[in-house]
Length: 115
Length: 111
Image 1 (cartoon, rainbow over the protein chains, first blue to last red):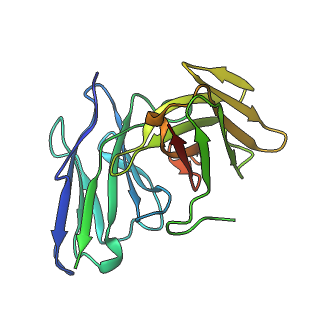
Image 2: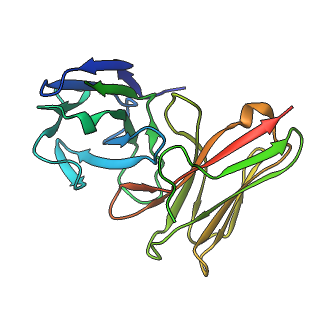
């Protein structure tokens, strides 16, 4: 069964450093998302991406964050200068077509720890 | 109110019992709802979904009920098994494509 994959599974970084989290969405999906989950809390939407551009972003997704689809398979989340409060699980998700009534499938996540 | 940190609502059941997990949503404009299961250290796993033009949908051992009048969603798991132990989240479509997740319920199944 096709699945979303993410690398790395764990990332430890120093505050102020840049990190890039990588995702390979399900191959025929066209819509891509990043979510995060601070330990013990609910999953929060960060950004959605379609047709090589951001379609929606949350207030969490400030200028320190960016997303990119550098080739036909990868989808990345970059945090330019990490802060302690960026420590969380980051989940990538993808769906087949836009919007309503189409299930988003999640990857296993990257656990980011900022020291 | 919201649960913060590790203080998730918890439902403890015996193996073989039926479980009912509830969720209240706030956006009356939402028209698609999903239940996800999340095991420790893993990503949310799709269980079942329902559209707003339905009030009940059944899957294998799971049933979702939607009451739009009171903006309430429930997940019923029949013959609960130890492998069902996880945190269960409901999610709704908010604006456009983003999912808005509920705070989650921890299900503990005792053998």
